[in-house]
Image (cartoon, rainbow, N blue to C red):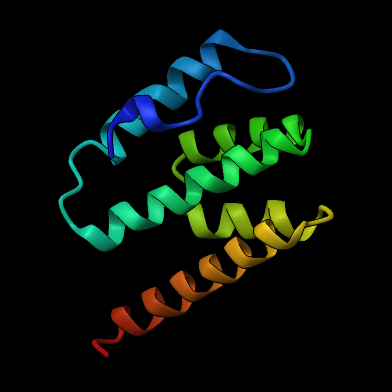
Length: 112
């Protein structure tokens, strides 16, 4: 996945500093990924970002950018954001995928 495929410069305030920090974060986190499962996760995260924008959740998209650039766990950030909004079917499906990622990470931490 290339950086230009990510949703970056949207939000409630079009904050250039936040967008720059988010772009740097994505360059550091996504560009070096070689593991297909990690790339798939970031594609799902980006689909969620696209859906947030599509449904007018610009403040929530800004929160996503702030929290990811603070190196919070992307799964926890997305679940926190998505649990507090009305989710169309697509977002509900993506929400469940993120829940699965948390389960996968939990079992991976214990060597399962």
